[in-house]
Length: 346
Ligand SMILES: Nc1nc2c(ncn2[C@@H]2O[C@H](COP(=O)(O)OP(=O)(O)O)[C@@H](O)[C@H]2O)c(=O)[nH]1
Ligand SMILES: Nc1ncnc2c1ncn2[C@@H]1O[C@H](COP(=O)(O)OP(=O)(O)O)[C@@H](O)[C@H]1O
Image (cartoon, rainbow, N blue to C red; front, side):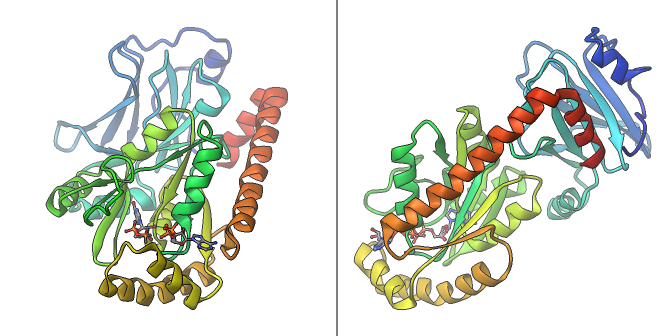
């Protein structure tokens, strides 16, 4: 199970299992690793999520790190255990099975990459959820421009409005005639978006067809807060970034029946200039190559006949729901045993 608690409660699991009030007066826990003390702030009655601050003994300074990922909702108490020196396991008191286990990543590959991106001197930590396969696991849909991603997603959202929510990306490209700011995209100035990327507000971003596109952490949180499964329409580079992040998702690649048909659809849509269409078709070749042969995607769907493709997409999503129901039943019937197994294996 990794390391013993560095600083916590005398017999934390027993105390937690008995449902006793945790001893910490301020519902804070502190974990020391190296010269740093990570303080996880519980509910103070005002904040809606768990907070993090760091005391650096080498400089005798408190630091407020850049905190990435969806933050755990505030709770009545929590337990913190250091695992493998690179992450802290948090067990929330009184939380539902799908919300009780979280990780605060301190020195994982993802966090190290993010630190480098922030210039190397900024403290960065990242939250990730500890229970796999929960109902909020996002769905990433990628594929070349004009293949039909938007059409398929719209059908899904229309048929299951309470089940799926669209992650509204940011982009620096100009809006199309029928596109609404905040609905299809958050249309943004390049300098503003670059600043927000630097501030750690994006789960992923990429330069696509000459413009910047990105998924903000907030865009995904908004959907999760509505209790819906989040759908991300992002390019292959973005899908790769999500794969490397702590977010667990299902990755689906949509491919066209042929390049000729892709070109026909792009032209028929009538939203791009000739130069833009040429650029998108050139990029499509590389996207198809990466989408099909990189092993990045869990499912590859041909969008030949729209209705057939949509039905196959629904089968994939329905199958996922069955797995989730199975896992919830497992937690319900084998509760604590299963949860403790997860502690050992994650
Ligand atoms: N990485 C990334 N790609 C995005 C995001 N939003 C949209 N894209 C991708 O950017 C590409 C261009 O999107 P868009 O300009 O709407 O054109 P369309 O795909 O032809 O409808 C598509 O491949 C989208 O999947 C995002 O937030 N992140
Ligand atoms: N299976 C299909 N057969 C024929 N036309 C399609 C199909 N799927 C989508 N289209 C059309 O192709 C065009 C591009 O689809 P769209 O959803 O905008 O693609 P994307 O979001 O991948 O760029 C649209 O005009 C759409 O109506």
